Structure formats: structure tokens, C-alpha cells
Length: 201
Image 1 (spheres, helix red, strand yellow):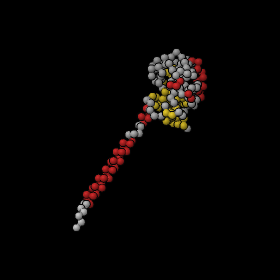
Image 2: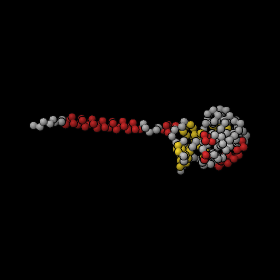
Image 3: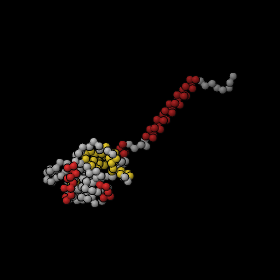
Image 4: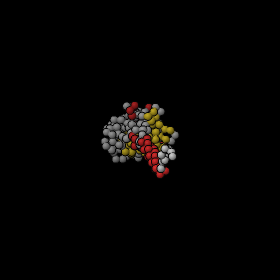
């Protein structure tokens, strides 16, 4: 008779099933752990570059996305909106974006339309006065709290600072600076906010 102990087939089945179940649980736990290393959508919006498809935007349409906890406006300007930028230059406090340019306006946006593509404005929707969020006032002409020759733009409801359709502040307003233009770039029909040819912001 052999000295080797015979393994009960029933016990062997239980042992195999237990090992298999333990392996599945281990893999699931490892997968869950690895997934925690991936940034959430909120984390991406808070710090990482944000990608936006602008192919379907219509002239006069504006959308807002979150980047680093800030509202970023994307405005597709109509040809008339782009043309209005030349009309307001004499009324602006900083028409050429010369005040603190490194902090507020990337080199490629230091132009009349403050953008890479003349028809698309990308700007942080936070007033440079006390951090309120201006509202859009794209309709031209006389309106409450706006001049009779209003050509369209933005107004901060807190203290009345006004900005043109390039985010440039008008003279004699509480806001000291133009709206911030974040670093951005275009890749095909995609707008990437928070990144340009130099890398991440």
C-alpha cells in the first residue's frame, strides 16, 4: 500500500474553486486600485488641459467650459463681431494687451482680436476687478447700463466694468485689466485649453 495520502476529490474541487475565486477578487482589487491613479473628469477640468470640439459652433454662439476651476468662454464671432473690434479701440484702456501681457495674454493672442483664429475668442470669464463673472451683451445699441454706441461685448454686473468682444476693458472702469486669455491651441476641429506649442500651462 502506498504511503502517499490520497486527496479527497471533493476537497480538491473546493480548493480549486477557492483559489479561482481568490484570483478573481485579487484581479478586481488590483484593477480598482490602478483606476484610482487615473485623473477624474473633475481633476482634468481643474488642472489638466481641456479639449473642446468647436466644429459645430455657429457664429454668435458661446459655450463655457471649466478649466482649473475657472469658467472659460469660447465665442465664435461673426464677421460683423470681428469688424466691430476696430471701432472700439479708441475707447479701450489697453487695446494692445500691453498690461501684464505674460500673465494675461499669450504672445500669439496679442493682436486686435486677442486670439489665434480671428473668429474664435477664448477667454477666462472672470472680471479683473473683484473676480465676478461678467455676462454677455452681444446685442448692439442702447441698453440699460450700456452706452448708446454699444457694439456688443460683456458687462460685469457687480460694478459695471465693460469689455468688448475681445475681452478688452473699456476706459474709466473699475476693472484694471483685460480678461485673461488662457494658453490654447487648435488641433483640427479641436480646441485645447491649457496647452500650446510650449507645453502645458
